[in-house]
Image (tube, rainbow, N blue to C red; front, side):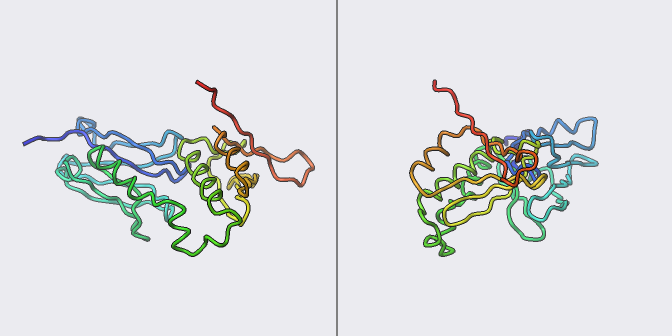
Length: 221
């Protein structure tokens, strides 16, 4: 019998939206009863505690309903070869996973349904001027957000996305700066593909124009 003392926790951050991974060792609770996990952006993700290291409680910051949920699990379930799902108590949507690394990675891949498939299921294909370009632009924006490369000059990573037939508007929740990504032509798509980082810039003083995005290209190898 193999006794596992290390498990992997994957949670989507309620502050920046990224999926964050943490290795959680059973030995982390030696000599203390509480262990806290934070996203790389600094936001709190989860607090794990136990009185006897036999039964553990997990308090998570939920991205779906923006509240905290309390979960209880026996030690044998968290540190084992099985996958444990963490769900929002309000919506029952999966917000995180705990278990062996490969099983956690597979669960996340299965959870990430493509934007194109969702749009087709909702009958939105005819809504866009150029569906293929729009899907690709949205996928690129999603990847930038996952990498922490989509932000506002005010320092916030909480960016709302509004989709229109020919464009995507990015709006900062903190300061209301906006930026428009067009998605009509192959040129629009190529511009987004070359974008290694997108930061919304504030409008000039006295101007009514929306903030502009600053794109950074990665250096060629």
